[in-house]
Structure formats: C-alpha cells, structure tokens
Image (tube, rainbow, N blue to C red; front, side, top):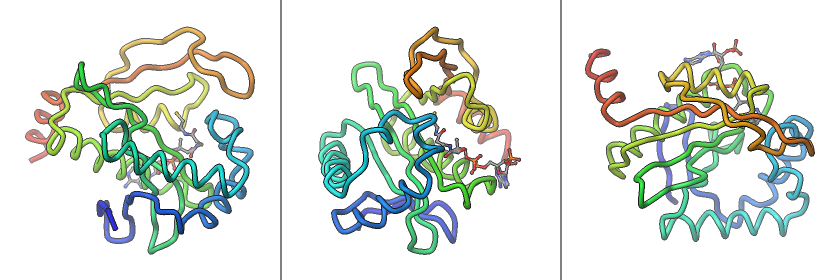
Length: 186
Ligand SMILES: CC(C)(COP(=O)(O)OP(=O)(O)OC[C@H]1O[C@@H](n2cnc3c(N)ncnc32)[C@H](O)[C@@H]1OP(=O)(O)O)[C@@H](O)C(=O)NCCC(=O)NCCS
C-alpha cells in the first residue's frame, strides 16, 4: 500500500479499488459542500464513477501525471488531497483538496499540503507549487495564505462552480521560498 504519513493520526495514501464504497459514502455525506466548489463531485454518483477515479489515480501515479491521494484518519477515509496537475515542461504542480465537514477546522488539510509540498520540492524536485481556488472560497484561500504562498493574481471567470463561471485566486510558492522559510523556522 502506497502511503505518506502526515502526522500520527493522518496518512495520505493512493486509493485502491476496495476503497470505492467507503469513498462514495464520504462523498455522499458531504455532497452539498463538495458540489459547491468541486466540479468532479457533480459527475461522481456511483461506485463505477469512483472506480474510474481510482483507476485514473493509479494511472496518473505511474506516469506521473498527477498524485490523487486519500486523506485517512486512523484507517478511515475522510477526504482527498494531492496534485491535480504536474507540468513536466515547466516543473510545477498544483495542489487540490477536500475534507469531510466533521474533520474540518483542525489543520488536517494544511498539514497534508505541507507534506505534499515537501514531497514536491524534496522528492520530485519541482520548482513551483500552486493553489488555485474560487475567490469566494475563503477556507481554501486561507490554506494557501497559512502556508506562505504568494497571492500572484486573480484569474477572471476561469472556474465553473455550481454552473456559473467564477474568478479564481492563483497562489504560488517557489522551491527557493520554501527552503528559506524552512531554514528560518530552524
Ligand atoms: C477547503 C477545505 C479543504 C478547508 O478545510 P479546513 O478544515 O478549513 O482546512 P484545515 O484542515 O487546514 O483547517 C484549518 C482550520 O483549522 C484550524 N487549525 C487548528 N489546528 C491547526 C493547525 N495545527 N494548523 C493549521 N490550522 C489549524 C485553523 O485555525 C483553521 O480554523 P478556522 O476554521 O477557524 O479557519 C474545506 O473547507 C473543504 O473541504 N471544502 C470543500 C471542498 C473545497 O472547497 N476544496 C477546495 C477547492 S479549491
């Protein structure tokens, strides 16, 4: 099983086919909130839809085209996080995330992002990590700011959420900035 420990109670791990029912149940329990911000939630309704996601995650991991991981709390699936994009030519990745409402507000996603950023800069030797989110998604933007990403600009009408086109924040973090921040933190 491919897993990345984040903190004693939290792992990130690659999804497997046997996760399909559990993952679908978490998506159903959080559907309203997920559909507000994540377009994939609108097209994920059945076990087959989730299996397609699992197969894509495993295919993307091999290439690598992306890194789609589950957030797992003491063995239980509570969300997802990873790299929705790797741009090989320009050497950057883009992080995405979601978490079940009952686990929100504990810094779990922030800690998962920290682990992903370390992996991107130290293992994959990426030069840049970015986070994009709808300007109305304050909780998502707060994660980027908390992690020291620079707000680089606002893209106009680039994200479709709830069937309307919204503006998006673009946050970026360079490997040199991350190394400097880590050194300063000791
Ligand atoms: C966006 C989303 C992932 C944010 O989740 P979150 O729970 O706010 O994020 P974190 O796990 O990092 O938790 C941050 C909160 O924990 C608190 N916290 C507690 N301990 C913490 C710690 N050690 N480190 C950081 N934050 C901590 C923070 O103060 C913050 O609290 P707040 O709720 O008062 O602002 C979540 O709202 C979600 O799943 N939304 C739906 C899907 C979505 O929008 N995805 C993103 C699309 S771009």
